[in-house]
Amino acid sequence: MEPCHSKIAPKRPAHPLGPALRRTGRGALLTGALLTLGACAVPPGTERAPEQGISPEAMEQIAALAAPYQDLSTVERRPGDGCYWYRHVGPVETTMLPLRTPEGNPICSGTSAGS
Image (tube, rainbow, N blue to C red; front, side):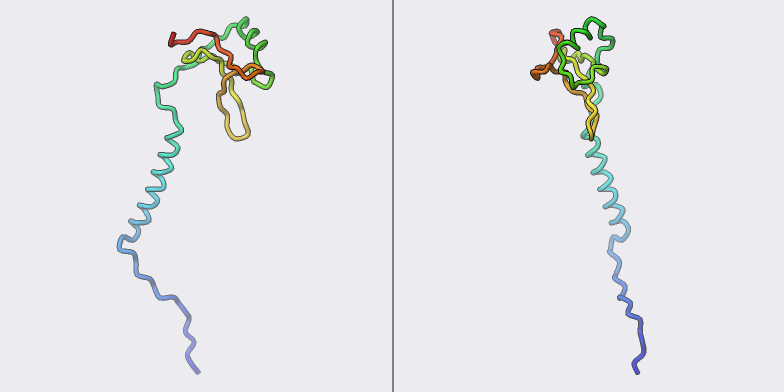
């Protein structure tokens, strides 16, 4: 009768770089993730702060012009383009969108910081 030997796979030789290779792979993955997320950020100083304090009279006029599906409680005027924007809360993300009329035209004040 032949002896019963356990079938253990022979030990593979270690990679010459060993654990350093694994650390480098994790580091590259982390670096790639940070670069990807950083691409979504707005560089500081490139976007002007929205104007605060839209007058009640202006809000009445905006409400009369705006399409009904927009959230008028979050309206702000951006000085860069002179247009009004509102916060849209979607199923995936929340973003600022230009306030539009029912026909799809943007609602702007006619004055911008560039003029």
